[in-house]
Amino acid sequence: MSGALYLALFALIAMVTMYMLERWWPLTLLGFSAASTIAAVSEFVLGRWPLGIVALGFAAVASRRWHMRRRQDDRGSFSARFWMRRAL
Image (cartoon, rainbow, N blue to C red):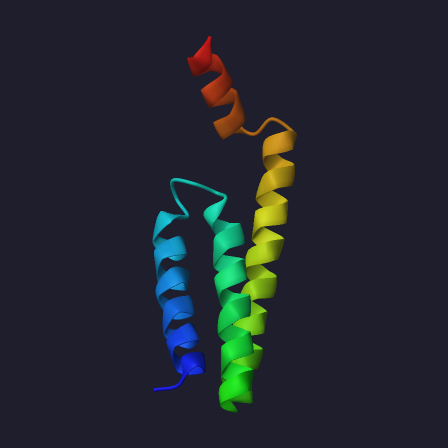
């Protein structure tokens, strides 16, 4: 097994882990995006460019979702108000 294959396997495990933790910690969306980018690079290195394009799509969607969630929390979404109220 080559190093790129180990990198792809690590990226896949990181993607699944970040996806599972998304509900409890929104920053994992950014981690999912990073893991998808790593997966895309490793797929391109291995010569499997269709899978690399799909992984880049996952990274773009996850980055967009993280950005939208961050903007929503900045405006005072329900979750931000809930935690502020709970802290007081």
